[in-house]
Length: 338
Image (cartoon, rainbow, N blue to C red):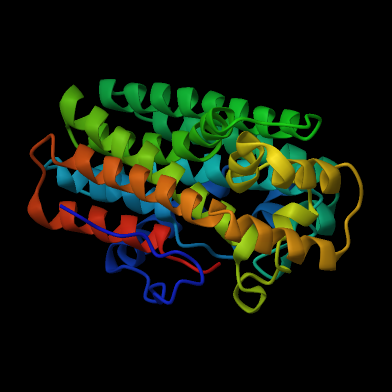
């Protein structure tokens, strides 16, 4: 099986139609998510609903439901897992917005900007706790295994976020360190979503592990594309200036690759990260990175992980239609312009 990754700016149009599987997942998960939020302290209802009203494609929830169907189970059996994964994802967004100082998300004020940092922190903590409660409402062996996997993914995600923050104080970061950070920060929860769906769908260990591996590689490919957009994304699509990640002095995959090669380009990056560069300097650096082949190298890493993820699906027997939906979601989330 072969596929190709859409690289921002290369002429291939990213898909604009949300896959039917994700739209179907949203219709199943959103009501259950809303019901779960009702269990929070009433003082948190408004800020949490404000955050969730921003929408989202519910990719993680969709992967959980599709994975359950792929191993012969029902999507309904995986709804609690899908809700739990979405709760963890959204708690991380509430906290990330504070860490990054982002005042807007999806063209709406972030919770900390609207209600204050303290409220956003507590709301995030509440969603994280609620995720485990949702799974353990019925403490069956499958639900308990799902909770264990979600807790492990949460720890890995926190480790990835911690590493990302630690990179800010360093002059140089290796490609290996950057990929390890992205495996935790992005790959862990996508992996857990797939594995949890499989477990709740009645899968054996081999199927759950294969689907988890698919999710992990998909997460790394997704993050690599995000890193590309952070440097070369079209401002009219991303809503951010060219080289936004460079302007923010983030040590993402393109930066790690350039630093690893050494020479004048690496020195240029170290120089601009040591001060506050202007937009003209940033745009010049993005051109230098592209001429040096960094953009193509990052796209190749994304392609490699996408193919590894799709290959993991071929190691086990999966139902045909859900497997095709997993392929469709993979193409969708790695071929985007924002």
